[in-house]
Image (cartoon, rainbow, N blue to C red):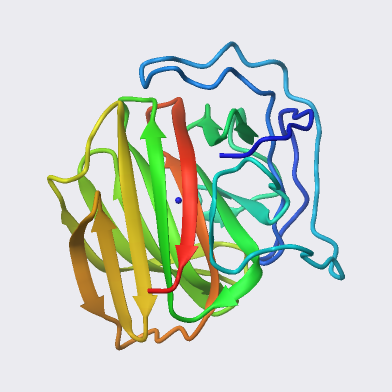
Amino acid sequence: MKFKPQKPFIFLAAVLTVASLACSVDLYGTPTPAPQSPAQTTATMEPAVESTQILPPDQTFTGAQQFFTDEFDVNTDYWKYLVINGAKSEVIDGIVGLMSVRPIGGLLIFDLQGPGAWVYATYEPFTYSDVRLDVKVNNRGSNNNNVSLICRKSDAGWYEFNIANNGLYEIKFGRIQSDNTVSYTPIADGGSTKIKSGLAENEYGITCQGNTLTLYINGVEARRLEDQKYLLPEGKVGISVSSFRDVPVIVDFYWVKISQP
């Protein structure tokens, strides 16, 4: 859970109401210089101004690839975004504190300045059954936060793999309810010494193949299990970054790779 030609990006102060992950809103922010080292901090953020984008129902994804590595240097329009207020576990039509998600300098940067901001990005052009998703990320904060990878996201729910900066992980079933709240049901949890905590780079991966869910941390299989309860057949893949009590949370995605398992 990288891009090249740059458009002007501005902070999001409001987003359109969304009822599910399939109807998401793009979040972009004022660019700050890409980090030269993990310890570098972002520049002072400018006052928020309104910017909203939503995917039209009839839009097609010309040129989209099903299996590829997105280095965030060409086209960002295929990724659609959703904000959840972590304090209430509900989809919101605004933001949680100041936040931005923007491509700059070959990175996709999640910059969350407020606590309890859970921001999802799903790859919209394709639906997947059996799939592998890998990412390389750089954490620029020493505070605790989650980087998440999701698969088989649909109206029926999704599988979510949360890797925390404190060395723990969780696998959950998530679903948006009719009242626009989000329910999360734990499937498994644990810890891994392979997670590089603090200011560090990590590579995470997941596979969803048949009923088997597998989590990889820095090239090592951390957890494999069989889901016999939710049995989600197919859906979108995506990434997420979550802030908790301590902020800011700044996570750079170098690349996202979608492949066959």
